[in-house]
Image (tube, rainbow, N blue to C red; front, side):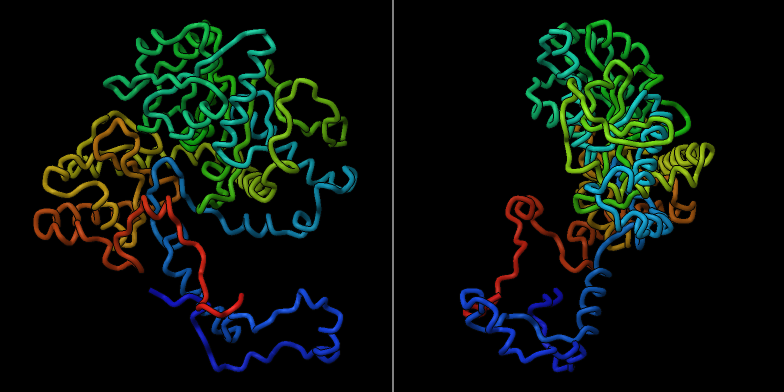
Length: 485
């Protein structure tokens, strides 16, 4: 383990700081006594060079999409062009403030308004809000809109239907909004079981939440009939946009019958994400739901952009100011740079890469759903489990080979699941190397299983109690007794 910065000490001269313009004693006289320290703070004595080296070396211990292959299924941890950082950090954007007069920020408002139009066109929705800060926040927004819509029609809806393969945030968001969650089964082909869905549709259902392609990476072939059934029962159809990376430029949720859509800009549209942020989860709706969108909306009249002044039917404001502006700027630049054909290429290459990997790996792992996949697929390490090694062990061993572990044990309907998403930005050479690594690990199970069971061996820490780490995180350095920070 590396030392913490507070545990380091150097005799290097750090006296490059400018001298005080007046004696220190004179400055301290102006500070109230109750604010003065009784002892020296326990800060490390380090030069600038020591500090830079310390944190640079720490960063090199991390896995990141800039340094490693990241086949993280359902999270789309793909490359983020560095040119977007340059655009987003431009003083044209960083030196403005939401409290400025609308006339002073017409350029920023234009970008946001155009972004709403771009996303509406890409998804087949009629209008978008950019307020939600992430995907789950977008789900929360969509469900609040769902509730407002049904209340406006004097309808009491108490249930939300969710496939058993859905992302975990779906039932969590529905429960948070006070709905009863009803699970819809998956059929033998890996799709929503239409018979089970119909048996659970009645006038108490507010909406069906689903993603297409689903988390198994399969396109829901009966989506038009599903939409028809939900609408006939008086419910709305909600689109979880986490897997939109497979559809951009190919087909649109709005054309499939979805009424509400949330997108993850930090997945599909090249915004870096990790460690909980930054994210952006815009929500789009059809015309009959526009009045319920969060306030304020950005509107345009002739050549002027402005915030909506009144919105009596709105669900209200969901976030300070107007969304995660820095993330939105990156995605806006990404969409503008790629254009229509470039955006379509995102999904085409993602689908090609996923199917290439799936074909290469089916001789090593079991494929519970072996149909043509979209941008991701789920394999099973159940045969490896019979030989004494689980999906978790394989994921840990991948770290020793410089590959970040894919999502494991999700979706829950697949035993020893490993969800793999290569994204559109990885080369054939990288994918071939990934296959080679998994093949070597599979061979180790027979030749030297302990090497896999005890992995990782090359990371700063080995196996940790992940449940305890999540429930009882130790995030604070406590200085030696008697020192003051």
